[in-house]
Length: 499
Image (cartoon, rainbow, N blue to C red; front, side, top):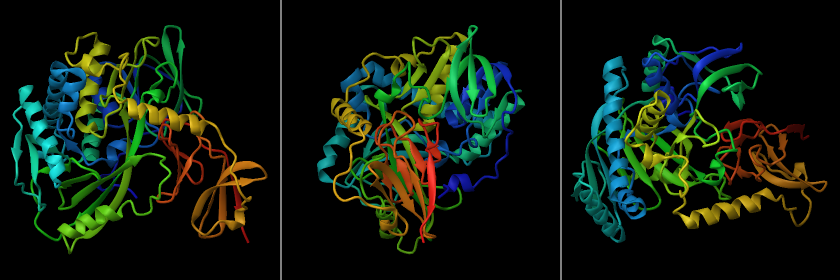
Protein backbone atom coordinates (compact mmCIF):
# COMPACT_ATOMS: atom_id res chain seq x y z
CA UNK A 1 0.00 0.00 0.00
CA UNK A 2 2.52 2.58 -1.17
CA UNK A 3 1.34 6.18 -1.22
CA UNK A 4 0.76 8.09 -4.42
CA UNK A 5 3.77 10.24 -3.57
CA UNK A 6 6.10 7.26 -3.24
CA UNK A 7 4.87 5.91 -6.57
CA UNK A 8 5.23 9.23 -8.38
CA UNK A 9 9.01 9.48 -8.28
CA UNK A 10 11.87 7.43 -9.67
CA UNK A 11 14.23 7.43 -6.73
CA UNK A 12 17.97 7.70 -6.75
CA UNK A 13 19.57 4.98 -4.66
CA UNK A 14 22.22 5.83 -2.09
CA UNK A 15 24.81 3.37 -0.84
CA UNK A 16 24.77 1.60 2.51
CA UNK A 17 27.32 2.55 5.15
CA UNK A 18 30.01 -0.14 4.91
CA UNK A 19 32.94 1.44 6.75
CA UNK A 20 33.68 3.50 9.87
CA UNK A 21 33.67 7.23 9.14
CA UNK A 22 33.99 10.58 10.92
CA UNK A 23 32.07 13.81 10.34
CA UNK A 24 31.07 17.08 12.02
CA UNK A 25 27.31 16.44 11.99
CA UNK A 26 25.50 13.11 11.80
CA UNK A 27 21.79 13.37 10.95
CA UNK A 28 19.83 10.19 11.72
CA UNK A 29 16.66 9.97 9.63
CA UNK A 30 15.93 10.73 5.97
CA UNK A 31 12.52 12.36 6.25
CA UNK A 32 11.98 16.05 5.65
CA UNK A 33 13.36 17.09 9.05
CA UNK A 34 16.62 15.25 8.50
CA UNK A 35 16.97 16.26 4.87
CA UNK A 36 16.22 19.94 5.53
CA UNK A 37 18.63 20.07 8.48
CA UNK A 38 21.37 18.41 6.44
CA UNK A 39 20.65 20.77 3.54
CA UNK A 40 20.97 23.94 5.63
CA UNK A 41 24.16 22.76 7.37
CA UNK A 42 25.78 21.55 4.15
CA UNK A 43 25.13 25.02 2.68
CA UNK A 44 27.16 26.42 5.59
CA UNK A 45 30.06 24.15 4.54
CA UNK A 46 29.79 21.82 7.51
CA UNK A 47 30.77 18.20 6.96
CA UNK A 48 27.39 16.43 7.14
CA UNK A 49 26.43 12.75 6.98
CA UNK A 50 22.77 11.68 6.80
CA UNK A 51 21.80 8.05 7.45
CA UNK A 52 18.40 6.49 6.74
CA UNK A 53 17.27 2.99 7.74
CA UNK A 54 15.36 2.39 4.49
CA UNK A 55 15.09 5.02 1.72
CA UNK A 56 14.81 8.79 1.98
CA UNK A 57 11.30 10.15 2.45
CA UNK A 58 9.85 6.64 2.25
CA UNK A 59 8.25 6.70 5.67
CA UNK A 60 6.11 9.35 7.40
CA UNK A 61 7.17 12.22 5.12
CA UNK A 62 6.23 10.17 2.06
CA UNK A 63 2.82 9.18 3.41
CA UNK A 64 1.45 12.59 4.31
CA UNK A 65 -1.21 14.77 2.70
CA UNK A 66 1.63 17.29 2.15
CA UNK A 67 -0.21 20.48 3.09
CA UNK A 68 2.27 23.28 3.75
CA UNK A 69 0.30 25.40 6.17
CA UNK A 70 0.31 27.15 9.51
CA UNK A 71 -3.35 26.15 9.90
CA UNK A 72 -3.04 23.17 12.20
CA UNK A 73 -6.70 22.49 12.84
CA UNK A 74 -8.49 24.45 15.56
CA UNK A 75 -5.28 25.09 17.45
CA UNK A 76 -4.66 28.75 18.20
CA UNK A 77 -7.37 29.31 20.80
CA UNK A 78 -5.99 26.24 22.58
CA UNK A 79 -2.48 27.67 22.34
CA UNK A 80 -3.51 31.06 23.69
CA UNK A 81 -5.35 29.42 26.59
CA UNK A 82 -2.44 27.12 27.44
CA UNK A 83 0.75 29.12 26.74
CA UNK A 84 -0.44 32.70 26.18
CA UNK A 85 -0.80 35.06 23.24
CA UNK A 86 2.90 35.76 22.73
CA UNK A 87 3.92 32.11 22.32
CA UNK A 88 0.86 31.41 20.18
CA UNK A 89 1.90 34.29 17.95
CA UNK A 90 5.46 32.95 17.72
CA UNK A 91 4.17 29.47 16.83
CA UNK A 92 2.11 30.98 14.01
CA UNK A 93 4.96 33.16 12.74
CA UNK A 94 7.39 30.24 12.77
CA UNK A 95 5.09 28.17 10.57
CA UNK A 96 4.28 31.07 8.24
CA UNK A 97 8.05 31.67 7.85
CA UNK A 98 8.47 27.96 7.08
CA UNK A 99 6.17 28.26 4.06
CA UNK A 100 8.37 31.04 2.67
CA UNK A 101 11.52 29.07 3.49
CA UNK A 102 10.29 26.03 1.59
CA UNK A 103 9.36 28.17 -1.42
CA UNK A 104 12.81 29.79 -1.31
CA UNK A 105 14.59 26.42 -1.26
CA UNK A 106 12.52 25.24 -4.22
CA UNK A 107 13.38 28.36 -6.21
CA UNK A 108 17.09 28.40 -5.32
CA UNK A 109 17.63 24.70 -5.98
CA UNK A 110 15.26 24.57 -8.96
CA UNK A 111 13.30 21.65 -7.46
CA UNK A 112 10.36 20.48 -9.56
CA UNK A 113 7.87 19.34 -6.92
CA UNK A 114 4.53 20.84 -8.04
CA UNK A 115 4.62 23.54 -5.38
CA UNK A 116 1.60 25.81 -5.59
CA UNK A 117 -0.01 28.36 -3.34
CA UNK A 118 -3.48 27.39 -2.09
CA UNK A 119 -5.84 28.75 0.54
CA UNK A 120 -6.45 26.44 3.51
CA UNK A 121 -9.73 25.89 5.35
CA UNK A 122 -10.93 24.31 8.58
CA UNK A 123 -14.63 23.68 8.01
CA UNK A 124 -17.59 22.20 9.83
CA UNK A 125 -20.79 20.52 8.74
CA UNK A 126 -22.27 20.46 12.26
CA UNK A 127 -24.09 23.27 14.02
CA UNK A 128 -22.55 22.40 17.37
CA UNK A 129 -19.05 23.03 15.93
CA UNK A 130 -19.80 26.49 14.58
CA UNK A 131 -18.99 28.32 17.82
CA UNK A 132 -15.56 26.65 17.90
CA UNK A 133 -14.88 27.91 14.37
CA UNK A 134 -15.90 31.47 15.26
CA UNK A 135 -13.93 31.38 18.53
CA UNK A 136 -10.85 30.31 16.59
CA UNK A 137 -11.24 33.24 14.20
CA UNK A 138 -11.43 35.62 17.19
CA UNK A 139 -8.34 34.03 18.73
CA UNK A 140 -6.39 34.47 15.50
CA UNK A 141 -7.46 38.10 15.21
CA UNK A 142 -6.29 38.66 18.79
CA UNK A 143 -2.74 37.72 17.78
CA UNK A 144 -2.85 39.78 14.60
CA UNK A 145 -3.45 37.13 11.95
CA UNK A 146 -5.74 37.92 9.03
CA UNK A 147 -7.92 34.81 8.99
CA UNK A 148 -11.42 34.95 7.57
CA UNK A 149 -14.74 33.31 8.43
CA UNK A 150 -16.49 32.05 5.27
CA UNK A 151 -19.67 30.12 4.52
CA UNK A 152 -18.93 29.14 0.91
CA UNK A 153 -15.91 27.23 -0.41
CA UNK A 154 -14.79 25.98 -3.81
CA UNK A 155 -14.73 22.30 -2.81
CA UNK A 156 -17.93 20.36 -3.65
CA UNK A 157 -18.99 20.03 -0.01
CA UNK A 158 -21.78 21.59 1.99
CA UNK A 159 -20.46 23.53 5.00
CA UNK A 160 -21.95 25.61 7.78
CA UNK A 161 -18.81 27.68 8.23
CA UNK A 162 -15.03 27.65 7.83
CA UNK A 163 -11.82 29.49 8.72
CA UNK A 164 -9.80 30.58 5.71
CA UNK A 165 -6.01 30.97 5.79
CA UNK A 166 -4.90 32.73 2.61
CA UNK A 167 -1.84 31.91 0.55
CA UNK A 168 -0.79 28.61 2.09
CA UNK A 169 0.70 25.88 -0.15
CA UNK A 170 0.90 22.25 -1.22
CA UNK A 171 3.43 20.13 -3.12
CA UNK A 172 4.71 16.62 -3.83
CA UNK A 173 6.85 15.84 -0.75
CA UNK A 174 8.87 13.00 -2.30
CA UNK A 175 9.86 15.11 -5.30
CA UNK A 176 10.87 17.84 -2.86
CA UNK A 177 12.87 15.34 -0.79
CA UNK A 178 14.65 14.11 -3.91
CA UNK A 179 15.66 17.69 -4.71
CA UNK A 180 16.90 18.27 -1.15
CA UNK A 181 19.00 15.10 -1.30
CA UNK A 182 20.58 16.15 -4.60
CA UNK A 183 21.37 19.59 -3.14
CA UNK A 184 22.98 17.98 -0.06
CA UNK A 185 25.32 15.84 -2.15
CA UNK A 186 26.07 18.83 -4.40
CA UNK A 187 27.19 20.62 -1.22
CA UNK A 188 29.51 17.66 -0.47
CA UNK A 189 27.21 16.12 2.14
CA UNK A 190 26.98 12.32 2.31
CA UNK A 191 23.80 10.23 2.33
CA UNK A 192 23.60 6.56 3.28
CA UNK A 193 20.43 4.48 2.89
CA UNK A 194 19.58 0.99 4.22
CA UNK A 195 21.60 1.90 7.31
CA UNK A 196 19.73 1.33 10.57
CA UNK A 197 21.19 3.07 13.61
CA UNK A 198 20.79 1.12 16.84
CA UNK A 199 22.78 3.05 19.43
CA UNK A 200 24.58 6.25 20.31
CA UNK A 201 27.50 6.48 22.74
CA UNK A 202 29.59 9.34 24.09
CA UNK A 203 33.26 8.79 23.32
CA UNK A 204 36.26 11.12 23.70
CA UNK A 205 34.21 14.31 23.64
CA UNK A 206 32.25 13.23 20.58
CA UNK A 207 29.54 10.69 19.79
CA UNK A 208 29.83 7.27 18.24
CA UNK A 209 26.75 6.49 16.17
CA UNK A 210 26.46 2.71 15.80
CA UNK A 211 24.77 1.03 12.85
CA UNK A 212 23.14 -2.40 12.90
CA UNK A 213 26.01 -3.88 10.86
CA UNK A 214 28.54 -2.66 13.45
CA UNK A 215 29.89 0.25 11.41
CA UNK A 216 30.23 3.57 13.24
CA UNK A 217 30.09 7.28 12.57
CA UNK A 218 32.09 9.52 14.90
CA UNK A 219 30.57 12.99 15.10
CA UNK A 220 30.57 16.09 17.28
CA UNK A 221 26.89 16.83 16.63
CA UNK A 222 24.03 14.36 16.27
CA UNK A 223 20.50 15.12 15.06
CA UNK A 224 17.75 12.62 15.90
CA UNK A 225 15.32 13.11 13.02
CA UNK A 226 13.87 9.61 13.27
CA UNK A 227 10.19 10.52 13.63
CA UNK A 228 10.26 9.03 17.16
CA UNK A 229 13.57 9.24 19.09
CA UNK A 230 15.32 5.87 19.03
CA UNK A 231 17.03 6.61 22.38
CA UNK A 232 14.92 6.29 25.52
CA UNK A 233 17.14 7.60 28.31
CA UNK A 234 17.83 10.42 28.93
CA UNK A 235 15.04 12.36 27.29
CA UNK A 236 12.15 10.09 28.28
CA UNK A 237 10.12 11.03 25.20
CA UNK A 238 8.22 7.76 25.52
CA UNK A 239 6.54 9.31 28.57
CA UNK A 240 5.73 12.57 26.77
CA UNK A 241 4.23 11.42 23.46
CA UNK A 242 1.86 8.97 21.84
CA UNK A 243 1.22 8.06 18.21
CA UNK A 244 -1.88 8.15 16.04
CA UNK A 245 -2.57 6.35 12.77
CA UNK A 246 -4.53 8.00 9.97
CA UNK A 247 -5.65 6.86 6.52
CA UNK A 248 -5.68 8.31 3.01
CA UNK A 249 -7.34 7.26 -0.24
CA UNK A 250 -6.47 8.90 -3.55
CA UNK A 251 -9.24 8.92 -6.13
CA UNK A 252 -9.61 9.94 -9.76
CA UNK A 253 -12.78 12.06 -9.47
CA UNK A 254 -13.63 11.92 -13.20
CA UNK A 255 -14.64 15.56 -12.71
CA UNK A 256 -13.10 19.02 -12.57
CA UNK A 257 -10.87 19.69 -9.58
CA UNK A 258 -11.45 22.26 -6.86
CA UNK A 259 -9.05 24.82 -5.39
CA UNK A 260 -7.96 24.97 -1.75
CA UNK A 261 -7.03 22.53 1.01
CA UNK A 262 -9.61 21.40 3.56
CA UNK A 263 -9.95 19.66 6.91
CA UNK A 264 -13.00 19.48 9.17
CA UNK A 265 -13.12 20.38 12.85
CA UNK A 266 -15.26 17.45 14.01
CA UNK A 267 -14.76 13.71 14.32
CA UNK A 268 -14.22 11.62 12.32
CA UNK A 269 -11.59 13.70 10.57
CA UNK A 270 -12.01 14.43 6.87
CA UNK A 271 -9.20 16.09 4.92
CA UNK A 272 -9.23 16.97 1.22
CA UNK A 273 -6.68 18.25 -1.29
CA UNK A 274 -5.84 17.76 -4.96
CA UNK A 275 -2.63 16.51 -6.61
CA UNK A 276 -0.67 17.58 -9.64
CA UNK A 277 -2.02 14.80 -11.85
CA UNK A 278 -5.71 15.25 -11.12
CA UNK A 279 -6.27 13.06 -8.06
CA UNK A 280 -8.16 14.04 -4.93
CA UNK A 281 -6.84 12.89 -1.55
CA UNK A 282 -9.36 12.02 1.17
CA UNK A 283 -7.69 11.62 4.56
CA UNK A 284 -8.73 10.99 8.15
CA UNK A 285 -10.17 8.21 10.34
CA UNK A 286 -7.52 8.85 13.02
CA UNK A 287 -7.07 6.49 15.96
CA UNK A 288 -4.40 5.83 18.53
CA UNK A 289 -1.87 3.35 17.17
CA UNK A 290 -2.28 -0.09 18.70
CA UNK A 291 -5.88 0.47 19.77
CA UNK A 292 -7.73 -2.81 20.19
CA UNK A 293 -10.35 -2.04 17.54
CA UNK A 294 -11.48 -3.63 14.29
CA UNK A 295 -9.59 -1.84 11.51
CA UNK A 296 -10.84 -3.74 8.46
CA UNK A 297 -13.14 -0.91 7.37
CA UNK A 298 -10.73 1.96 8.01
CA UNK A 299 -10.72 3.01 4.35
CA UNK A 300 -14.45 2.42 3.86
CA UNK A 301 -15.58 5.72 5.40
CA UNK A 302 -13.18 7.71 3.22
CA UNK A 303 -14.19 5.82 0.09
CA UNK A 304 -17.87 6.37 0.88
CA UNK A 305 -17.22 10.10 1.30
CA UNK A 306 -15.41 10.15 -2.02
CA UNK A 307 -18.33 8.38 -3.73
CA UNK A 308 -20.83 10.83 -2.23
CA UNK A 309 -18.95 13.75 -3.71
CA UNK A 310 -17.75 12.06 -6.91
CA UNK A 311 -20.17 9.20 -7.79
CA UNK A 312 -18.04 8.06 -10.75
CA UNK A 313 -14.69 8.27 -8.99
CA UNK A 314 -12.11 5.50 -9.08
CA UNK A 315 -9.92 4.68 -6.08
CA UNK A 316 -6.28 4.63 -7.20
CA UNK A 317 -4.31 4.42 -3.94
CA UNK A 318 -4.85 3.56 -0.29
CA UNK A 319 -2.29 4.04 2.44
CA UNK A 320 -1.87 4.92 6.09
CA UNK A 321 0.73 6.47 8.30
CA UNK A 322 1.31 7.48 11.89
CA UNK A 323 2.63 10.54 13.62
CA UNK A 324 3.81 11.52 17.09
CA UNK A 325 1.75 13.83 19.27
CA UNK A 326 3.14 15.51 22.37
CA UNK A 327 0.96 15.73 25.44
CA UNK A 328 0.65 19.51 25.16
CA UNK A 329 0.27 19.32 21.34
CA UNK A 330 3.41 21.43 20.75
CA UNK A 331 6.36 19.75 18.97
CA UNK A 332 9.63 19.02 20.75
CA UNK A 333 12.47 20.76 18.91
CA UNK A 334 15.99 21.51 20.12
CA UNK A 335 18.31 19.83 22.61
CA UNK A 336 17.49 16.15 23.10
CA UNK A 337 18.45 16.32 26.77
CA UNK A 338 20.39 18.59 29.09
CA UNK A 339 22.53 15.51 29.85
CA UNK A 340 23.56 15.00 26.21
CA UNK A 341 25.12 18.20 24.82
CA UNK A 342 25.25 18.56 21.03
CA UNK A 343 22.44 16.04 20.43
CA UNK A 344 19.28 17.53 18.93
CA UNK A 345 15.77 16.30 18.23
CA UNK A 346 12.64 17.19 16.25
CA UNK A 347 9.49 15.18 16.97
CA UNK A 348 5.82 15.37 17.97
CA UNK A 349 4.62 17.21 14.86
CA UNK A 350 0.94 16.38 15.38
CA UNK A 351 0.49 15.49 11.67
CA UNK A 352 1.64 18.92 10.48
CA UNK A 353 5.18 18.01 9.52
CA UNK A 354 5.57 19.95 6.29
CA UNK A 355 6.04 23.34 7.94
CA UNK A 356 7.20 21.94 11.28
CA UNK A 357 10.09 20.04 9.67
CA UNK A 358 11.40 23.34 8.32
CA UNK A 359 10.89 25.06 11.67
CA UNK A 360 12.85 22.24 13.33
CA UNK A 361 15.65 22.30 10.77
CA UNK A 362 16.16 26.03 11.26
CA UNK A 363 16.17 25.83 15.06
CA UNK A 364 18.60 22.90 15.07
CA UNK A 365 20.81 24.52 12.42
CA UNK A 366 21.03 27.69 14.50
CA UNK A 367 21.81 25.72 17.68
CA UNK A 368 24.70 23.95 15.94
CA UNK A 369 26.01 27.23 14.48
CA UNK A 370 25.78 28.94 17.86
CA UNK A 371 23.08 31.35 16.77
CA UNK A 372 19.91 32.47 18.54
CA UNK A 373 16.61 31.45 16.98
CA UNK A 374 13.68 33.63 17.99
CA UNK A 375 11.23 30.71 17.78
CA UNK A 376 13.13 28.10 19.78
CA UNK A 377 11.54 28.87 23.15
CA UNK A 378 8.06 27.91 21.89
CA UNK A 379 9.19 24.43 20.87
CA UNK A 380 11.85 23.84 23.55
CA UNK A 381 12.19 20.08 23.79
CA UNK A 382 13.52 20.10 27.37
CA UNK A 383 10.61 22.18 28.71
CA UNK A 384 9.69 21.02 32.18
CA UNK A 385 5.92 21.38 31.94
CA UNK A 386 4.80 19.93 28.61
CA UNK A 387 1.77 18.21 30.11
CA UNK A 388 -1.43 20.19 29.68
CA UNK A 389 -3.48 17.26 28.46
CA UNK A 390 -3.90 15.48 31.81
CA UNK A 391 -6.64 13.20 30.50
CA UNK A 392 -4.39 11.88 27.72
CA UNK A 393 -1.49 11.45 30.14
CA UNK A 394 -3.72 9.35 32.39
CA UNK A 395 -4.85 7.20 29.48
CA UNK A 396 -1.27 6.72 28.30
CA UNK A 397 0.04 5.75 31.72
CA UNK A 398 -2.86 3.32 32.16
CA UNK A 399 -2.18 1.69 28.79
CA UNK A 400 1.55 1.47 29.44
CA UNK A 401 0.94 -0.11 32.85
CA UNK A 402 -1.56 -2.63 31.52
CA UNK A 403 0.57 -3.53 28.53
CA UNK A 404 3.83 -3.95 30.41
CA UNK A 405 2.24 -6.75 32.44
CA UNK A 406 1.69 -9.82 30.26
CA UNK A 407 -1.50 -11.07 31.87
CA UNK A 408 -2.35 -14.69 31.20
CA UNK A 409 -5.33 -15.26 28.97
CA UNK A 410 -8.32 -16.82 30.63
CA UNK A 411 -10.45 -19.56 29.16
CA UNK A 412 -9.71 -22.58 27.03
CA UNK A 413 -6.31 -22.99 25.47
CA UNK A 414 -6.27 -22.32 21.75
CA UNK A 415 -4.01 -24.02 19.23
CA UNK A 416 -2.45 -22.92 16.00
CA UNK A 417 -4.78 -24.99 13.88
CA UNK A 418 -7.75 -23.17 15.38
CA UNK A 419 -6.65 -20.02 13.57
CA UNK A 420 -8.74 -19.16 10.54
CA UNK A 421 -7.21 -18.39 7.17
CA UNK A 422 -5.78 -14.83 7.06
CA UNK A 423 -6.44 -14.45 10.80
CA UNK A 424 -4.18 -13.13 13.53
CA UNK A 425 -4.67 -13.15 17.29
CA UNK A 426 -2.97 -13.60 20.64
CA UNK A 427 -3.06 -17.21 21.83
CA UNK A 428 -2.01 -19.03 24.96
CA UNK A 429 -0.01 -22.11 24.05
CA UNK A 430 1.51 -24.28 26.77
CA UNK A 431 0.99 -21.47 29.25
CA UNK A 432 2.83 -18.89 27.16
CA UNK A 433 1.19 -15.91 25.48
CA UNK A 434 2.05 -15.81 21.78
CA UNK A 435 0.99 -13.82 18.73
CA UNK A 436 0.08 -15.88 15.69
CA UNK A 437 -0.99 -15.15 12.11
CA UNK A 438 -2.10 -17.78 9.57
CA UNK A 439 -1.72 -16.84 5.90
CA UNK A 440 -3.71 -18.14 2.92
CA UNK A 441 -1.16 -20.90 2.31
CA UNK A 442 -1.71 -22.31 5.82
CA UNK A 443 1.62 -21.08 7.10
CA UNK A 444 1.52 -19.73 10.67
CA UNK A 445 3.91 -17.02 11.86
CA UNK A 446 4.33 -16.99 15.64
CA UNK A 447 5.93 -14.13 17.57
CA UNK A 448 6.22 -13.17 21.19
CA UNK A 449 3.78 -10.21 21.20
CA UNK A 450 6.00 -7.92 23.24
CA UNK A 451 7.35 -4.68 21.78
CA UNK A 452 11.15 -4.59 21.53
CA UNK A 453 11.08 -0.94 22.59
CA UNK A 454 9.92 -1.12 26.22
CA UNK A 455 8.10 -4.43 26.52
CA UNK A 456 4.48 -3.41 25.98
CA UNK A 457 2.05 -6.08 24.80
CA UNK A 458 1.25 -5.78 21.10
CA UNK A 459 -2.18 -5.71 19.45
CA UNK A 460 -3.10 -7.38 16.15
CA UNK A 461 -3.95 -5.00 13.29
CA UNK A 462 -6.36 -6.90 11.05
CA UNK A 463 -6.16 -4.30 8.26
CA UNK A 464 -2.42 -4.15 7.64
CA UNK A 465 -1.60 -7.57 9.16
CA UNK A 466 0.80 -6.01 11.63
CA UNK A 467 1.52 -6.17 15.35
CA UNK A 468 1.08 -2.66 16.80
CA UNK A 469 2.18 -1.22 20.14
CA UNK A 470 -0.52 0.74 22.04
CA UNK A 471 2.07 2.42 24.27
CA UNK A 472 4.39 4.26 21.89
CA UNK A 473 3.30 3.31 18.37
CA UNK A 474 5.92 0.80 17.22
CA UNK A 475 4.69 -1.54 14.49
CA UNK A 476 5.94 -4.90 13.22
CA UNK A 477 5.00 -7.00 10.19
CA UNK A 478 3.49 -10.43 10.84
CA UNK A 479 6.98 -11.72 10.06
CA UNK A 480 8.30 -9.74 13.03
CA UNK A 481 10.10 -7.00 11.09
CA UNK A 482 10.14 -3.56 12.76
CA UNK A 483 8.58 -1.01 10.40
CA UNK A 484 7.77 1.95 12.69
CA UNK A 485 9.95 3.39 15.43
CA UNK A 486 10.67 3.79 18.28
CA UNK A 487 11.41 0.05 18.09
CA UNK A 488 14.70 -0.71 16.36
CA UNK A 489 14.82 -4.49 16.93
CA UNK A 490 12.71 -7.10 15.15
CA UNK A 491 10.54 -9.66 16.95
CA UNK A 492 11.72 -13.23 17.34
CA UNK A 493 9.65 -15.49 15.09
CA UNK A 494 8.90 -19.12 14.38
CA UNK A 495 7.09 -20.39 11.28
CA UNK A 496 4.88 -23.48 11.14
CA UNK A 497 3.20 -25.21 8.21
CA UNK A 498 -0.30 -26.41 9.07
CA UNK A 499 -1.51 -29.43 7.12
